[in-house]
Image (cartoon, rainbow, N blue to C red):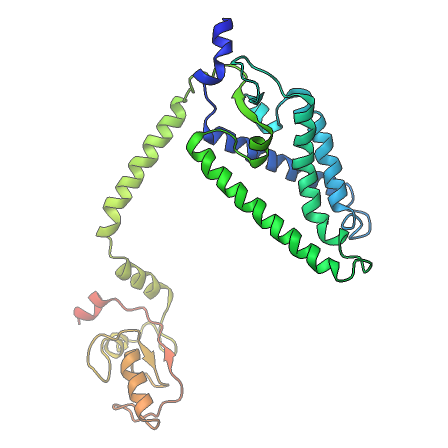
Length: 306
C-alpha cells in the first residue's frame, strides 16, 4: 500500500486536460466571487469600487489563497478534480507538500502579479517622475510582453511534457498530482444512448439534405406568403400575366414590376432601364415609375396546366 502511494504520481500522471480544466475552474470561481461582491454594492453610488478595484480583488484572492493553497495545497479547481500540488523540488519519490516559502511566493506571483499589472500605470503616472515616467512605462510594457512570451513557451513545453501548466508552477517547482489513484471513468447508458441517437440522426441528415431542392422549397414557401399586389386572387388572368417576362418570354427570374400589371425579370428590366431612362413597357407603353419586386402566389405547375 505504501509503495502504491509512493509511486502515485508516476502510475497516475495528471492529464493535461485535467490541469487546464482546473485553471479554467479557478478563473470561473474568481469571476463568480467578484460578481457576487459587486452585487452587494448595487445600491451605492456608481463607480464607488472602480478606484480601488485592484486592491479589493487582491484582498479577495488572498483570502481565497489562504483557505485553498496555503491550507490544502490545492486550488478550488484542483480540489474538484481530485488534484493537489506536490513539491517537485524534493528528489524523493514520496509525496511532499509545498513548503511555506513556495506558498508565499505563489501568492506573490499570482495575486501580486495581477495587482501590479492593473496598478502599474497609476503608480508611475505621478508628475513628480516627469520624463522618467515614459521610460518606466516603456520598461513595464517590455517586461509584460516578455512575461507573456515566456508564458507561451512554458505552455508549449507543458503540452509536450505534461507538467507545469503555468509559468508560476515551473518557477516555484510545484507539480500537480492526484490525491488518490484515478478510477475508471464510468459512462452512463443514458448518455451513450443519446450519443448513438444523435450520431445516427446526423448521418441521416447528411444523406438526406443533398436530395432536397432547397431553392424550390424556398420559392414555394414564399409563393404561399406573397400574393400579387393590386390584383384579385380570383382573377383568371393572374397566371397568364405572371407566367412569362415581357422581354425575354421566359418564366420570370426575380420578378419585378414597373407600375403596370406586366412582369419582367429583374436583370431584363434593370439592364433595359439602365440603357434607356425613358424605357416603357413593350405591351402597354407605361413608362418606368419605380422598380419593385413582385409578390405572387403562382405555382409553375399551375402555369403548365393552362
